[in-house]
Length: 134
Length: 256
Image 1: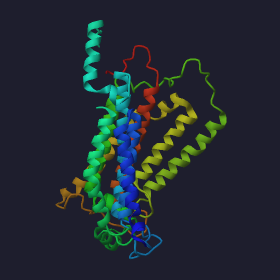
Image 2: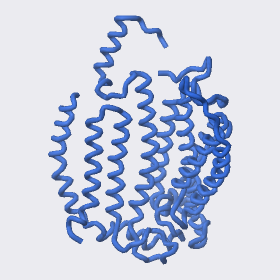
Image 3: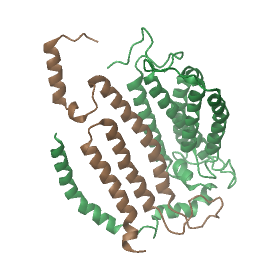
Image 4: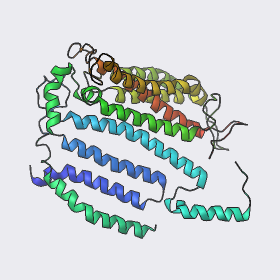
């Protein structure tokens, strides 16, 4: 096992995190941003599973193999499992926020949603026509 | 903030962080050489201590059950937030159809689709229950099984249409499952304290190794998680589908 090969899974995790972060920084759309966040999160799955892996080990389920067989780390698998479920619900929550932003402001571009621009839009709106109270 | 400024900030923070990342990656024990000692210990003593074959379930529901409790409430909070943000005044009316683009023809559902959904819906439900019930012996558990069960309800929508789906999947029941599951998990933690044991101490009979009903308290907590995940994910589907429904006359749109 060359040193490069043994560092490869961790480099994959770092790369996934980096491209996810790049996507978040350059994002022009909230839906795209939520997707990039998912890529960042995948990096944690790769990292956790790589930390807990060991060659010639079985899954940490001792049904077919007797207890005592070398097995991979069950702790990181439990972490990834709960991570995926919570990640899915949080993605749903973020997408709901995107829906509400689209409803209120009519755009999903973070550039257009800067707080100052909201103020300008509100001022322009007030000057032109009194908006009916909801 | 302009794109260029954002990229400069990213590059600056990368300059600070990348050496640290590189150093950490260089010092991690080589991939596949050894695993952390905690997992090794659990693998060694877990089967004998809990009579459970699936170590992942043993960690989630017993050894690190407290962490799963916190995670359970994160799930509850995220879904509650989704429902609060989306629902507004609607979500109780069940007779409406989903929204359609004007001008697009309404293609009637083929009988074959309904048939396939009616055959596979119950099969998926049984498979989900199987995954939930065998949490302690084979790969699976409340999280995985709950998601399968929730996906099965989508077949009702596919086969019976929106109104049929809303009639058979009741929002109130989903709320009860979601909250009830979290309550069951919490009570599993508090229950042992009534007899003087520690929080979430596994006092129930552990059963026989490799038996479906092994693991004692793990089984009940697993059931609670399955309830919460099934209810929660179905609730998510329902709320997003509701978002596509045309508001009925006189019905408030969600307040902005």
